[in-house]
Length: 470
Image 1 (cartoon, rainbow, N blue to C red):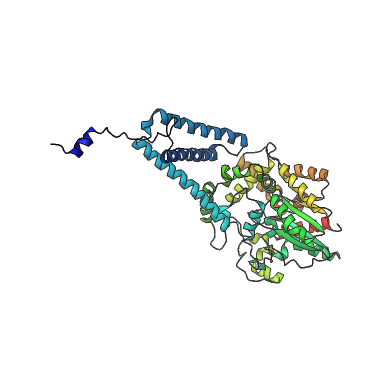
Image 2 (image 1 turned 135 degrees about the vertical axis):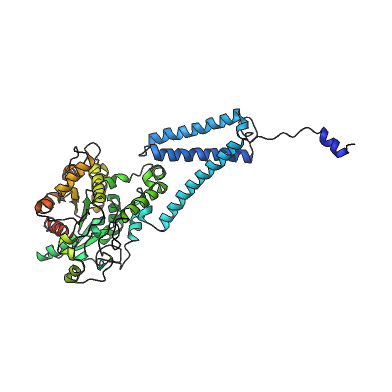
């Protein structure tokens, strides 16, 4: 005989399982089902992000609008499918896919955010983004040029620049020189072109103090930042901007204020999950062929020597200062340097794509900020524009015989003339005095696009002639 409790259970209607799809149109909204909807939206947006990084490059706002509409449309279709077939939501396969996809997407977003946090707290070239604010990029580079740190036996000054400390008040005549890694150079300070300028002008009876402002891996927009924040407060008598045609045209175009927040996530050059593995693989490949005593892209002994105060001590520590045939390459394999120079040649010498508009806008703004202070531009040529053999190697390597070797100067010089900005184009001077075609008289360090001791001397003497009396 059944008990009263058993009879009640038998007479009670069977419980109906509530589907996870009950949130769909026409049903009551619950916390659990709303969370499922949000998860599906998050997964859809993350998958769209990955697709855009793989196939929708470079970032373009119209294409982004189309892609976003497509992602949201796909999300809406998924919701309708689940409404029409609610059993899918409760299936084991759907739940497994839901968990896996959501966790993968969440891990990707959190990992990217973590890398960006690390890059902000502890700046590193491995975690650099192309579209950084100028102030942040300058701070990141300055962190590696700590005051007092020795480079080729000479300490960085209190502002982190490769120069003696800027005196207060400034000397009677002060020239502010602004640039990128050329301002740091690959020679001791005594041999740097800014120091050569001082000596050349002093020999003519002109007492001029050249204050050298610059950090590696910066570009024209950072030059503008340095002008605003460091140079103009010094009240210089003359401002010279050193434009390296090898990368400054491209670097100027990378900073675009419009849609910056979107580009930081949707341009692969700014996504660290994409960039970091590629950089680590390339670094490992290059280091496999490197000597233990030379950093990749560095010069032998640049950080090993103690304080060097005389020219004799410098040459004893670095014999290649007096004999360029003793120079050790900055990169372990000639193919690495050829690859770098080939990329620059294609970027700057292709008449179909070369566009210095952003560079022009930045220089125009710098001259405006300079006001009544004389403002000049030095155009520094790339190695491939001077070395005929390297140029031929690039043409053979790329197969791009349509490249125009002097195109950067052909575009920049006429604009400077029209804008009324005094300028010095070093390319004709370097072709006349440098290159393997002139008896192996190198002006660039071996497998490096920076001036060696001879190149700094040639550049400094030409700049002194150009600047004298201004």
